[in-house]
Image (cartoon, rainbow, N blue to C red; front, side, top):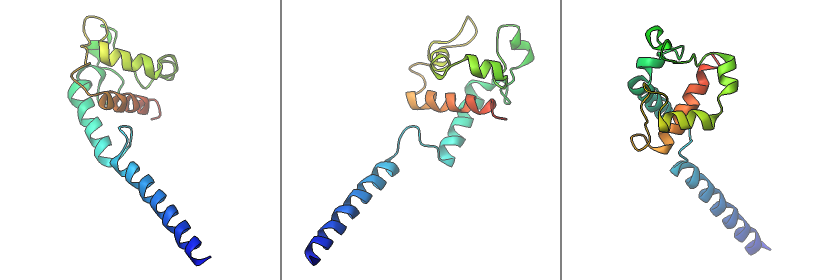
Length: 120
């Protein structure tokens, strides 16, 4: 009976270690302070010039179609897939395509960041 308990404890411990290792190795969608900071820096460097630091859009670019990310209707109408496609493929003649320039995990993080503007 004692051997069974030790074997069971070893098995549970191994499963727990495996699960924790998988989590620490991480998912590209994990949100850590570094990930949030990196995403904010990416947004500031690549998006804020037109979309504004606050996501409301810069006035001079609103004439070219830049939308207000804080608008509840915009947030509802634009799915994550549509936002991802716009980031990857560009939009109109003013927004560049970022596919191949940003990693898929960076695009996913930007989508999440953009969604955050709707919650403020």
